[in-house]
Length: 505
Length: 63
Image 1 (cartoon, rainbow over the protein chains, first blue to last red):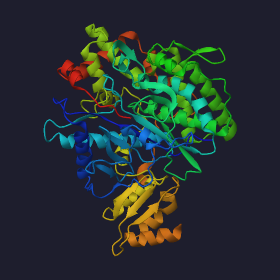
Image 2: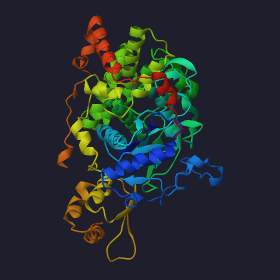
Image 3: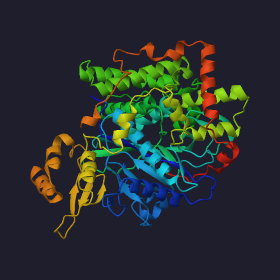
Image 4: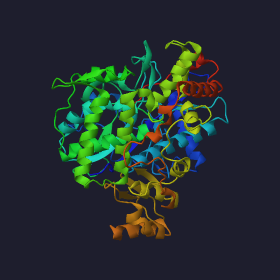
């Protein structure tokens, strides 16, 4: 029993061309990807994306959606414009243009701490692109947030590899109430109530108002609390990739760690089939909104069995079950990653339960609210004041001097779990314990020979061979440094590598 | 890989540690001055024309 599993975060960044709100965001996003690729010597013609195995319309409930029924924005495997930049980085991540945003999809990792590390590496990637583009005014600014406050939202999606044999109905039953409450630990806060901020005020999460249904396949409209996309990028009869679209982009390490760590642990209990049904929440979608709209955290959720409790109390229920389960299965000695998540989980719930403002070093929405309340008090500002909205947006500016969250972290006002040096290394180095190691290392070692890559393949061009060589990687925990490090490091050229891998496998 | 060693300075495996929360015990006056310091710092970098910046921050929807 462990928090460890293959997982990762993909983040679409908000994009602004200063002084030019009508600038084409797709072109600007393409500039971001291209600028970064150039800064690293990656030619976009090389290391492009291999779409062979992408099937975004497959549904976890067991049927395929007809392409005629799909909104064009769901067709991620149709690349209309081949000039759209799309590259794989040496850290194993994917950097590309998704709709009208640059997106960084982190490499697969196995611990919440590594999720935080490689997610923050993505911020440095975007920061580098912004710095490069700034040399030609007006440049481009990027924001790690999830809404413009005017009705548009863009995602921060979590991915969790899980057992195929777990009934999806169980995932839905147990994760819906958990996600309704989870936002109080890891929401990023937002000025304005309603998707278009029509009611002045402050709410806990960026994304919550954009969710309209409990379960579904869509990600861009009628967003569901539990998304059913079933595209495992792995051996399909063994694994499912749970695609979670309800989370916010985080700057606070603790909130980010808790977002993925607590979800992975709850998922482990679902897989082990040890959760009873007694935490189901009535009317989950309106309740999700109500919890987000109440930063006092006093709102009581109504459970199907008639009990009423706050989001913090509901999370304590999940926490206590998890702690008991971990204790039983690990003989009281959980691994360090699991212990760390449990420690922060109880610490943050304690603080939120006493006085939410006590969690301002750990939780984004609380840290942001403390700053905004400071402004309100000092300058007598109402929630509709543009200065408060500006603070909300600039909170997530990726530039270290402009981004308010970065300034808070730099001045010691946010709890930092991963030091800057480790994050800087993760910009170029892949995690060692998943197939991302093979993907990233091949791009470092044999950049001239990697024609394309995807989550589950690397395609090589081998001198003297007419056919391209595709190495499938359908087992996410193979292709690790421990598994094939010697083979990869010992290969002087790609021909030798492929021959050695053929005999090693 | 050598570059991967992890630093866990805040690790407390023996349960919640109130030592992590100096702010909880901080007097209200000190809290106010801490917030004032933050605000002064942010004032120096906040977009000079907040209204125009907010109006110009228009995104197309994503996932």
